[in-house]
Length: 587
View: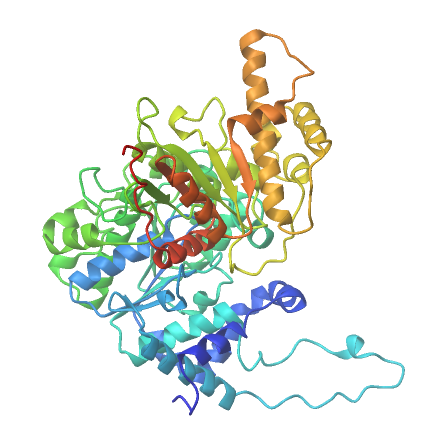
């Protein structure tokens, strides 16, 4: 129960007070393997242990598409009359978005009621402070103190929100909890669920390498940690460059969970209409239907809801995956018309392949791609949407930001013009701007030279380029007499990396065409002439620049690199008045 003065605004302040930074974040990272143990303690204190153990849960992880997959599950189940709670992260505009009840974010009243109930219960059940240790003379606390026997009274931000979603699902008597992993899976707070009805693993890619590891095998091991004994796990086809390695690790994870089954899922046919744009969503929708079908088989076994893998041998290695062991969810869709189809078509998930008209002369294309693979597919979607370059085309604008832990050249490789970039994707203007809030990280800003020449694994994009040429371009960039204030260092590093990469490809292209090289040419300057790049202090400043440009010509604007950036842009667009057409120049 909320106490006097515990309102919605106060709930946001209380939640934000749980954010970890600096040393506290560093300690949390070092103790992440104890996350599930700590979460079990919190569940006991909240009286949720039994409720979570018996709550039907669908658990979803992956590097790309896990949020969309969860959204498809929710949309279909709502059409089927199932009472759902959906937990996803991060939020785009308001934190209420993270917990959805029956297809809608919690209202401010619901949010406040449930958050304060959890907050107060945690404080009421917190263990008393440990008595000071009696230490022999000559010893120090560091030499005798071990880690705390009990976790903190109130956990950090994401763990608290995970507890809140469990509380809401139990208190609201949900039929099913659709649970998206935060980071990784094996040591994620959501993995406190002892046994899900089914789990799914979407496309894997290198992400959060500071926590999860720098190889696809390490990433797959982290994700495969959600596979539980006796639980079917549905997996989407993986990018060819690492499919064999990823599936091999996931198979090992399944073998370590007795009775678990690993099944590859076939994408839905292209003619199936989906509410979320992007060809790759056919895979996410198919995974969603496998989960939905498995839930109904679990809830009420019947001939009409056979488990999706019935009659198919479990996938045990990549050779079988290439043969016949595929789960096809299309028959389930056809057998449950029109409910399933309406759910898929009506599904909406902002910030993922989202097209938005902002006034009569500006189109926004918004996608929170933040891994190399998701950036590639986002650019393919953007390429299919923008107007042709020939004849009355709109100028292209990019708004970009990414987390400081990212391998920046890998992301920018799909955006900077090079010989593999479609002509339509050439950006005229690029704005690099920070976000108002983002996930705390221990990573720090690095210069373009470090990002291009000193970071990344052997197969990383920048490692495949001529290192001597990159080094000379970094020298040329650093030799320019440019003002470099201390503020916005990360955005300036992103801009400089863009400029070097664009200069590199322009130089290589001319060298290949003319079989010679003009050393005296200023390639950084030529890159700047082709694309105007600017560091701005905020998303609001970027929108002001766009408004000024719209007074002259129509625009197409791509926003990508971070879901936090996407959320900032969507929030500002809601607040800003749409620009109107400029007055006609004729009298």
